[in-house]
Amino acid sequence: MENSFFNNSIQINTKHKISIIHFDSTILKCGNSYKIEQD
Image 1 (cartoon, rainbow, N blue to C red):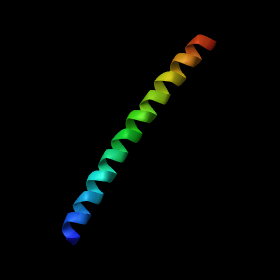
Image 2: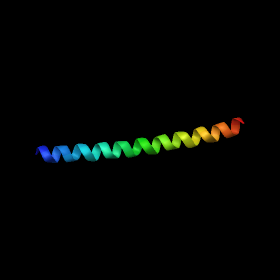
Image 3: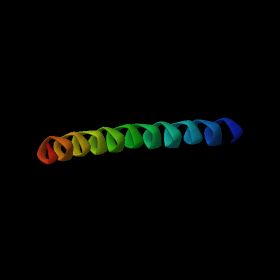
Image 4: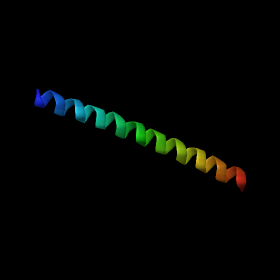
C-alpha cells in the first residue's frame, strides 16, 4: 500500500507542476501583450 500511495503522490505532483508551468506561460504571454499595448 505504501508504494501505491507514493506513486499517487508523484502523479499528483507531476500534474500540479505541469499546470503551474502552463499557468506561468499564460501569465507571461498576457504580460507581454499588455506591455506591447502600453508601448
